[in-house]
Length: 506
Image (cartoon, rainbow, N blue to C red):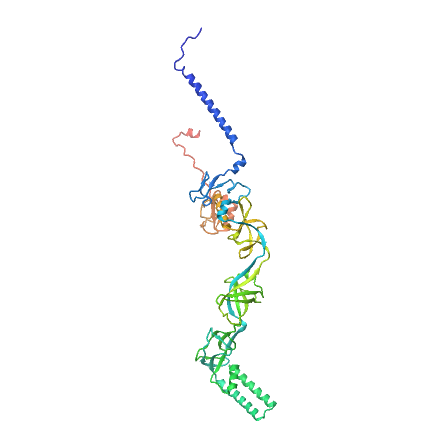
C-alpha cells in the first residue's frame, strides 16, 4: 500500500543547501591541489637558489639589512646583495674573495698592475755625529811643579794654530836651566870668533848644548820658545805652554794664579784635519756597512757634501738603546766640521733582482702583510706575502706572489677595510664561556680569584672550576666526578597525612 503521508516541512528545504555546500568543498579541494602542484613546478632549482641573494646590506654599515634592493637610508649608498657564501657574488668555492664592480673601482681609484721582476736600488739614510779622531788628540801635562802666572785668550772650544801660546807659568828650575843654555851659546860663539874651535871641541859643545836643551824640554819649555831664546839670547820671565798642533781645544783646566803639581793635565787639543763620524743604526742596517764602503756625508748647516769611508772597527752594540754604532772616517782639511756637529749619512745599496711591487700595494697590519690579487670579473683575493728590501716607491716580495699576477696597486687599504667589514658581519657570534660555579678550589678549598691573569680552570658538567695550583688541577682532571659538587635530587611531593594508611600502601 502506498505511503500517502505529507513530508516534514522542517527538513524539506535543507536538501538543496546541502548540495551547495558539497559543491563548494569540491571546488576548494581542487583549488588547493592545483596550488600545491603549481608550487612544485615553480620551485627554483639549486643553481637558481644559489644565484638568488639572501638579503641586501650596506657596504659601509653591514649591520643594516633589507629584503629589497635600493639605497641605504643611513648613508645613501647602494645596497649590495649578500649570497649564501657571505660575499658580493654567488661563489662558494672562494669565500674569502671580494667583488668590486667597475663603477665602484673607478670611484675608489683602484688600479691593477702585473707583478714584475726588477732590481731595487735604495739609499740607507741616518744621522751621524762628528767626533775627534782619538789618534789625533793631544794632552798637555805639567812636566814639573808650576805656578800659573799668565793666561792667553784661547779657551775651551777655541780654534788654535800650531805653536800658539796658551798660558805662562813660573818654575824654579827654569832660571838655572836657561842660564846654562845661554852660557853654552855664548861660549860657542866666542870660540868660533877666536878660531880656536876644532872637531873635538865642537863635538863637546854640541853635546853640552843638547843636554841643556833636553833640560829645558823636561821642565816644559817648547821647541819654539827654545829657538826664540837662541835668537834673542835673552831669558823670558815665564815659560809659555804652546799648542803642539793646529786644532780645537776640547778642555782647559788651568786658571790664573793656580799652583799645579807635576803630571797635572793642562789642555786637551784635537787635530781636526781628520775626524770620525758615529752613526747609530739598527742591527740589521749596520750589517750593510762593510769596511771600506764609501759613504756620502751631507752637512745641512754648511751645505757641503763630503766623502767618508767605513772604518775597520766593527760596530759597537749598545744594549740600552739596542742600536749599533758604526764609525766612519773622514778627511776634514778645511776643519769645517767640529766635534758635536750633526750630519746626514747616506749609504747607497743595491739589492739583487727579484719580484717587486709598488709600496702602496702592500697592506701592513701588525705582523701580517697582505696584497689583493685580481681574478677577473671584479674579484680580489687577499693574500699574505713576505717582503724584503724597500726602495723608494717599490718593495721586494720574497714569497706569496708569482710573476705576471695582477694585483691592486692603489687604494689597497679600501679593499682591506671592506674585506674586514664583511668578515666581521658574516662571522657567527661567539658562544660565551660558562660562568664560574665557585671561586673556591674544589681540591684544597682555597679561595681563588677567577679574574686573575694566567689562572687555572677546568670545565665539567656545564660549570667552570678554578684551582690554586697545577697539582690541584691535575687531581681534578683525573677524577672530576669525585670532586665536583653533587647535584641535589628533585624533592618528592609530600604525601597527604590525612590519607588512610591502606590507601598510602596501595
